[in-house]
Length: 189
Image 1 (tube, rainbow, N blue to C red):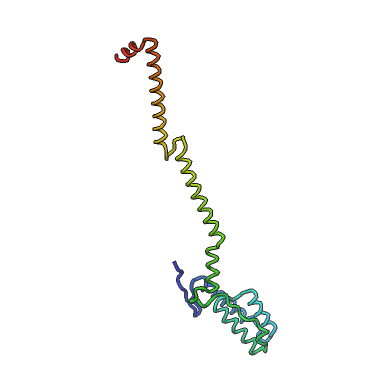
Image 2: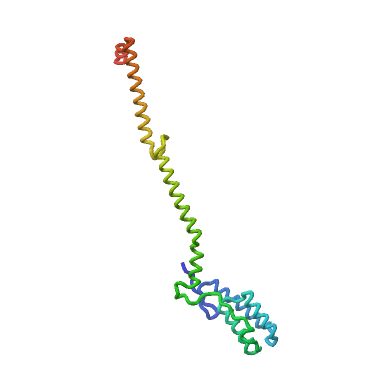
């Protein structure tokens, strides 16, 4: 959800935070104007340089004040264009270009190639691990959720086969001993 636009000091800002920043810059400007001796060229120049170096002003309100100070230094206090620092702007204004430096920088921040590569490698490793676990689960003799029916059926079949073999051996022994008929009569009752 996009933040609501805010109008302050004759400007429409993209968000409330920018409007608040502009209002704080306006308070700084009012304080500086009330305490600044405009006749002292070195003080005005030092204040201008410090404001730029320390990035005191970032909004259009502050930039307008820096522009006013720059023009005052050049026009009134006789500094040359080369002696007065240019005013740095901290944002891109041409938003119509898709391949501008800001767009490229934000894309790099959002999708770092290194993290994307690591993510892909980890996902492949996890998929291989899951496949390996399923293969182990389906090829083991121990019952588990994937093969319990087969394992139990095989165990039952082997027990049944062992029991049938033992019964056959018992009957053979009974015949040899001649007690086969007696056991059959007892089992019938």
